[in-house]
Image (cartoon, rainbow, N blue to C red; front, top):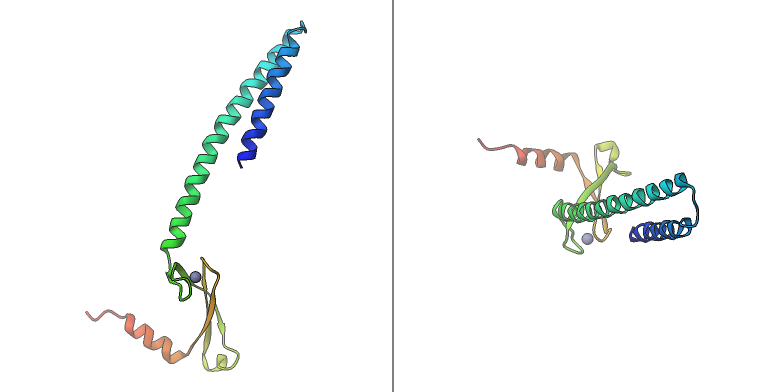
Length: 131
Ligand SMILES: [Zn+2]
């Protein structure tokens, strides 16, 4: 992204070189257009710098959010251990057995877990508040 700034800086210096060359040219319209071009490029550079700053802030925020969500990973212990999907188990699918796929968003470690209907209902019972 920093390359874009240097590209615009190059364009700005090209425009100012053109302005110097244009001193020998009497055409007023050409000179006005060249001045406009210089202003537009300067504005583009300022907007881009603001955009780059915002982008960096958003990246930092996103990284913090990613790290904050999920349980700790069994391998790297960073937060980001999450359920990625589930499908009926090949063997126990007919009996209601589900295979859950967990993945760590930090180190990409994955693990599968077989969930039986009994486990599911026990988990659901445990979630019911006592009052
Ligand atoms: Zn991990």
